[in-house]
Length: 297
Image 1 (spheres, rainbow, N blue to C red):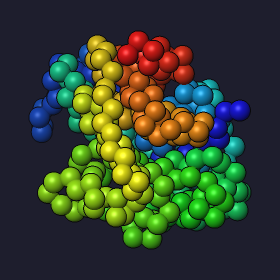
Image 2: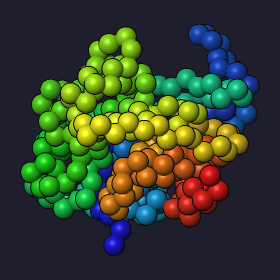
Image 3: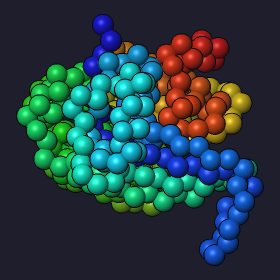
């Protein structure tokens, strides 16, 4: 049976403009293309988990505007269970993204309805308790992440926190995290140091995955395991949603009962499959695509 992955997080409509170069302050640049797609780390990771084979439930808030209707339809279409998603009167979260031909980008995020996702209902807590894995990020209010992690702990559900965007973790959250997923910048923010301090990270949480971009990933835990898992070599087109593809697939693999180092290896394949296409949520790979890269590697 597919693992039940509960994602508590943000949902944004991504408005993406492609142009020869990024405009400087006061400058107007004639663009090449415009696309609109579901985004936000929560929504991206929910879609990633669903495409990777997880039975995925999304908890969050969308606006009462047309973007909210579109977001709901797009996540539903990706196989994500949206029954418990709240509709907040007002605008949905929006990300305005400009990308140049070299792949550099500039992003402005207006959280909108995401900031209203506070105070978990009994039904939301029950969904979390019924899950195999709870997956959270840091684009929703910190108090909601804490409440969700506590509900997971009470229900025996494992908690994966992708500490992105980088910000300090609430002290009351740390005892409820089973696995922390961070890149190098986020790891420094968590420990407050100038260099990555693995022992310090493990003093806070029992298991950590450090994502290292093109160098792969590193898994460490309190039992003394410390393994670097190389990246899969593919032709890179766009790295935008690679981290979300990785994290969603990792939650599914762990929910399936795979050894965590093996789960990280499979998640690396998901990230590699993602970067072969342009875009964010539309580039997230299916389980067959992940397995293809995994077997080829």
